Amino acid sequence: MFRFQTSQHLIFTLKNNKQIGMFTLNCRGKLLSLQKPVVMGILNMTQDSFYAPSRHQASDSLLSTAEKMLKAGAALLDIGGQSTRPGSRTLSAQEEAAAVIPAVAALHKAFPEAILSVDTFYSTVAAAAVEAGASVVNDISAGTIDPDMFATVAALNVPYVLMHMQGRPETMQQQPYYDNVTQEVLDFFIEKLALLKKAGVKDVVLDPGFGFGKTTTHNFTLLKNLRQFMILNCALLLGVSRKGTIYRTLGTTAEGALNGTTVLNTIGLMNGAHILRVHDVREAMEAIILLQHYPEAIPSSL
Image (cartoon, rainbow, N blue to C red):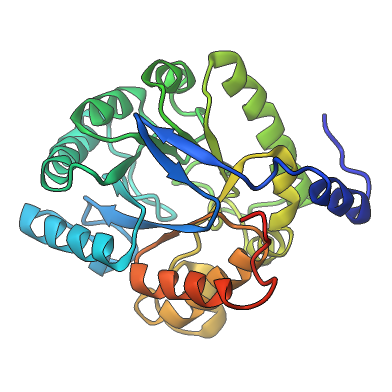
């Protein structure tokens, strides 16, 4: 397994590899440049999501929210039908497809130029969503729940978001433990990237999986060390929006966690994040814009 030597060696490697940080995702013919950070808006087709305002069932509500997100600057919209909050019930592929596929189709029809991502760990749902208009697959299980996922994504020829999770949503917060969370997530990515390359997947985005089988301390450690994952030469996705690490630390709720989300998004941008996955697009875009005007806050390669 890969073992980095020292932080100084890693920083030297990053600074001297001009390819690191320069990414373009081919989303079924639509090129998404990540030379500057972008925002992914969250659209949940479930009534069990931990943040109530992100839940949608009626198409009017979905399309209205999507329009606001796109106008606020979202580069991608991420549509999911599975609640992944700790202890949630896992839907079958059929149940998830019934919630997600009509939503993807409606969004693609209303906003044909928008880049749509499907949040699923089922290969059949991924394939149906891409047929309906999605052009990115976001899999919280990294192919561990559905062994056909990697081959399916390769055949679909779409970008793949590879996320780390310890355990499954039903059990992931039952005393998660790591000897070295950053090293173990890094090794996990190295192993999975080799499998994805073998399968023929071309564009991969890495998501350390904040809140997925991690304690608050683990999450803050990963945020601090986010830049270390850049040695893998993949774009980085930051998904901390309104999560428990924020609202428990601040003694509030998911509804009261917008300001905390902006703070952690800002730290993530300064540590190398390329994509912010958020419920609140306007505020995330403001963080990106302001940091772009702050000298050397965001690496020049981004």
